[in-house]
Length: 217
Image (cartoon, rainbow, N blue to C red):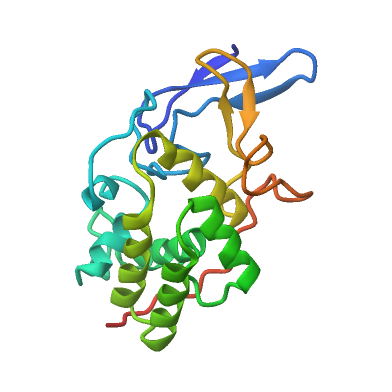
């Protein structure tokens, strides 16, 4: 243990910073569903690791809220009044497309990999990508994303699937979780039975270019 670090966003409570005496390197421990630099959780999971909520509304407090609003035709304000605005909505939609495998620009192998990580059928991903190509507005993007959210497993299995997919998409680093409370860490992407294996250079997020925001129907 080294010190506690305050957070104004994300979990909104202090996080524990650890330091390895052997390697003299520090690292921060994040609660389940939170990732470095993240403002919102990536899955509806409480800080103690329990799945929260039911149905699609459980994703309201996560990074996928933009997709829920978009699917309902609720565009965020063009200008910020202290809250989320349109550029943020568009950016989250584009990232969510890649995360959940419905981005039109993904190759077949990437889309198959995302479906395996999420433990969903490949067909909804293919249909979602086709729908976005046909109508690349914010509503169609949100609808395609929400359809995948609705396919995701419930309960404690949800978080590992989302973390694996996010890492494979290059949007988050390698997810490490404790084997048991207070125990050693294990890699979700390297453990036996994981649908993907880490490859060199994938431990750090590979941010994809996100096109400038634009409105659509």
